[in-house]
Length: 306
Image (cartoon, rainbow, N blue to C red; front, top):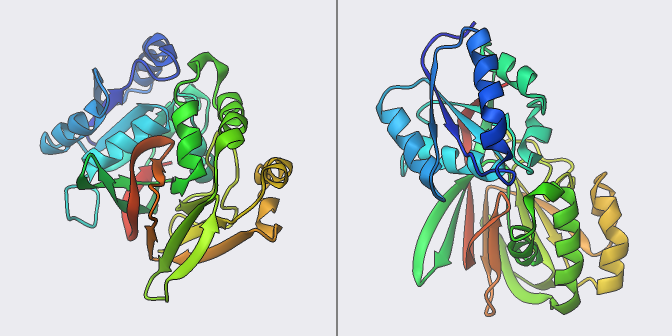
């Protein structure tokens, strides 16, 4: 069994308040496993980041995010000190929110009892992190991510999906938001630069920059992504028309959309995305800014208890 102190950062409003309801059962399970831990509840957006930073400063060996993918992302941003290349503690995950796309790639069980039991072990997975620079309210800002970021149509969909009722789960709100957004969305002209390559001018629906494989509640958008290969998988959905796009959506769930003639896949350590018309950025399903975007891979930056 792993030694050391663990801090659980619990987002009680994740999954429409479900997390707050199931936390007592999770806490009882943890105590039955004789795990040394404390817990703190988040009280506002981005509070998990400051709680994680406090936990690091207080010497906790493992910080456990209890919530959805958004909660995990906030905790990761607290684990990484600005400008560093390694997280300051191990990350643990108990998924309770509607998003569980990261867990699908790295193998975190959805069952709470099984997830808690994993936290008492010594096995960790080392993964890369992405760092994205973006514009927000006239300023340049940065955010770390483990799973997937992207610009364009997926950002617009995320805006709508995040307004959907939480009780509907992760897949249904995303699909309904996708269809609604598609009605009025226009593909955008962009400039894409991969590593030191020549700028590519193109019209796109979306540019997905993936460290892991899944997003949108189970869509296998980057089927070949490996979170520890030191590279992003960059999925470019080109100037596809609306009907063709809708016909292709079911293929995203098994990753076969990659064969579509309007879908291109690249690998890169650095991705720069420029556009005259602002493209919204989504990171782990949360909208946090817009173009110009710069994605940089940070190899082997994070250890996750699995």
